Length: 451
Figure 1: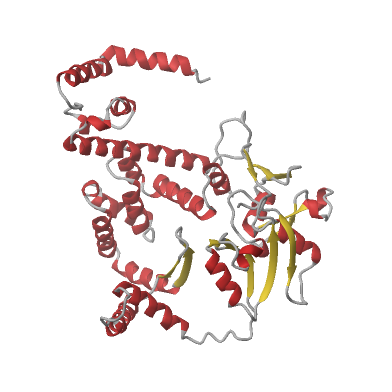
Figure 2: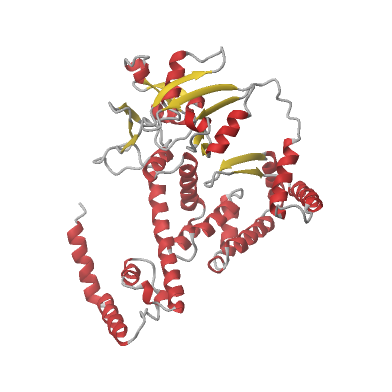
């Protein structure tokens, strides 16, 4: 059994035996008294990441550093940050093989990765599902395919962004080919920027497997897609991914040519603004032939905002908060759309009414559940309730009734995780939902929509 106090005493004895920490601290103190600036060790860059380096950096007064030493201390902190990032990744890779068990479970490992372990990671670290999947995949890649990259990270020689460049850049190669590429880059990687490293990796991948590089390109183009995202300042971004580079270059040239033609002295817009407007104008002019389909707008906005008496943000399901002007604009532009409306109390944010503008409503019970919960009730999930399964909190086969108080929206992924992992849900009297993970951790998500 781990004894914290005994471990501290042993550590203190080790430090006393070699007197490193004591002598260094005394030396720094003397020099600090004798000068007007903080003094750092001459061999700071050669000290390996770990407890000794932590002790040194912890005792440094940042405000008393000159510019030269500030850079040295910053770099040492970066090495330490990379070291502990590698430690976290190592634990995450171990977690992938931990079977379900509570606080006193035996230390065992499954031979294969445990399904839905990323759900535990997402809820424990407050990550989105995609971020948790990405971090777990990254950890397993370093553990199994590129252990040399993990060693570089653990030594503080590279950081997470450069480790990701190597992992992602060699993702389509086999394990042997990946290691050959890493062997050729491992000595140079610590001195390269992410851009330099990415270019070097691409070149080495083509050199290592030219036929495979051609196939990978053709396969990648097959995965071309458009991705949109909400930005923190209330705007949105639109990306085209996995596109043919020649077509991208041609489109970029066309946008630039049109933008330059419009860039007259009387136009108050910057050239970047004109390019962005041209991009949207070109796309808006394409006939997508969807006139026969009805659009569903699921927006939450208080009546005062809708009538212009308040500037409280609205919320579009799956997108998130939008400024009041956008909420009103969306309302004005949806004359022919199907509307599901929700009225909320501006003081408590509780739902006080709801309805639908067409004569073709969902089942009343399903609509009430979707009104009460705007999103999937699993912690951290933002999938709109209208796109979720309506789940029995207490399973039907276990005696759960099909009543409003036993129904809640769960997206398909978390619905499967609940039943197959399994996660154990509990609806609390407050309306909150409590989930117990397969490893015995308890997470709670509020039944009250965020303000």
